[in-house]
Length: 475
Image (cartoon, rainbow, N blue to C red):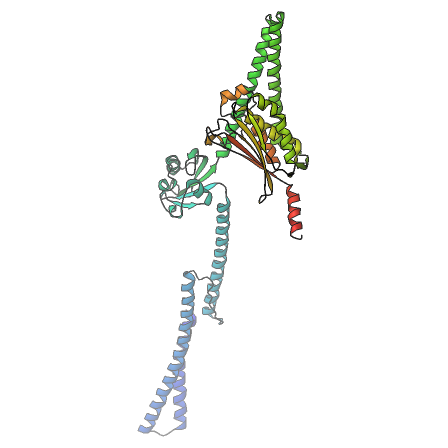
């Protein structure tokens, strides 16, 4: 650097000048000649040279320390310590170098902060995405897997930086990743994953980066479409079931009408029998249409609940009495286990009566002669709710059927269900009414051990419960 060279040069010039000045002063002060004079001049010259050399050394040492400081700061910056700065107040070239180095460090620190914030934003997006994201590098190794992808594929912390075939453990997914690597074209696949139960997923794969026509990696976005496929299947089953259930009474009505038109009107007994069948099937068709409309209104939340403080004991007792004659006629023991005191709940009386009617009707249908049906009512204090249970001693159901019995038109024993004349919508309506009240319904059963349906209802409206809690807390 020019400033350093200048300082060193000036130090040597200073040596010569000081020596010359000192010798001239000695010559003027001691004009005599001779050996003594030479010794004096030699000693003076040596002293001047030593002083000048010392001054030059000090100047060079200062420049060296400044260079060492700049070098050390540059080394720390290269190591990633971007907060380091050079503190140099001189206005020479070394000062310009220090200022330039400081500006470079500030720019690097700002860009590093922006890069960190960008990584944090990206990590937050990946962490909260419902879709799974996999990033496979050019070596075929998984380098990024967000929480959704880990959950769908059952991945652990050690599964990163491993080949994708080992990570996904799914041949079709790995085959799609390899296809994108070889073709460089985005693809879409619908696959089945078996981790944690069978699930349908839709995978979109696209190439990223790369050179010379080969991708530098593959990005895979995995969307869980299991619920969508289930709803599509339910919709398809519903349409098929409605068509079948409506066709049965319509066909019967049409058949009996044709019998009457073909001469049955001439025979009074035949006419009466056909009209009776037509009336029964028409009523069944009417009930089915009404149930369908009711269920549609409940699912669309188009039914307003008219809540009142209702005595659940009285409701259960009166509803059970309506089925007493039917139970006696079928040889079934119908009994109740109700509290001796009043049990209040803030519910819609007509809707809860409909729930109990549907459950009792269902229980009596599937209980053989000699069996029993029991209606229980109890208060659940910790949950501040009322539990209404209907138990029967019928044939029961396999455990695998319990999750589906509240679906529309679903029947465990399809042949027997049609003989009993039900619409297949009663339990679906029960579930919708109970959930509209903020409650829950579940079933317990085993083959040959009968079935129990439990309905839990909040005793009060949620806002009233909150007010009561605040009042007890002094709010």
